[in-house]
Amino acid sequence: QVQLVESGGGLVQAGGSLRLSCAASGSIFRISTMGWYRQAPGKQRESVALITSSGIKTHADSVKGRFTISRDNANNTLYLQMNSLKPEDTAIYYCNARRTDSYIYWGQGTQVTVSS
Image 1: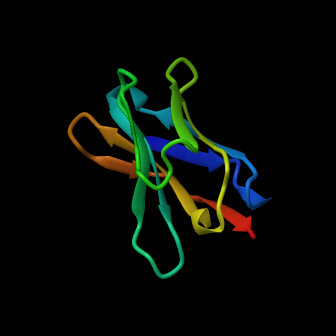
Image 2: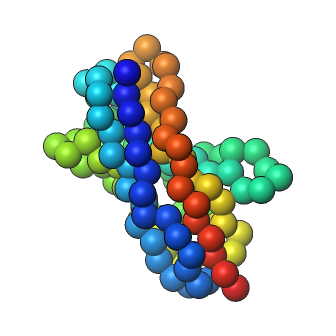
């Protein structure tokens, strides 16, 4: 089993920054790709950014140049640095971890609210 605990969400004005963290514990040796997803009210959950165990990153077009995913393997922590936040970034942000056999774990989510 893997446990994921997100933190760092909150209320911020447009143009501001937040840094999300996701602490992983448990059988983390079986984890390969990790990522951040978000779900806004009335919308489907969408991928924001992914990072492989070797550090290859992908970011959604909507956040490229503003958000950066990173991973500290020594401390089993995933990060999402979010700059130049927009009201449309308002959502619940979820941490995701994919096991080597493709089983997926989810965190409980952290709310990000961007005011205009």
